[in-house]
Image (cartoon, rainbow, N blue to C red):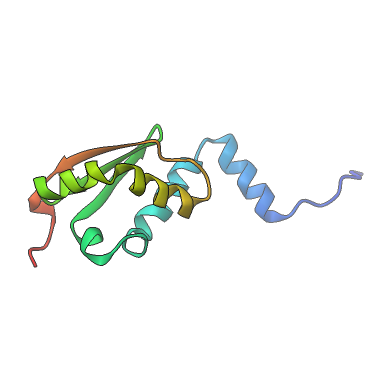
Length: 105
């Protein structure tokens, strides 16, 4: 018979994800899902997160103007994302320009 104290299911799941190094995928999913709520509507409509790899966010933007906006505000964007996650998770942003993936408004 095992005399260990019961472990809350939340801790079991966290340990499971950590052992398999899936935390980044889960955090990325939440970030992508909540993108529109983190930033002003105009910014969120002209930018799209593509993926997160090695603490780097790959971000698609509508045009060169938005690419420049992201470059200028990169530190602020990283801070907003990390604050929403609750840890210093994103360290860099790589920008890809592709107007084909955005609805013209």
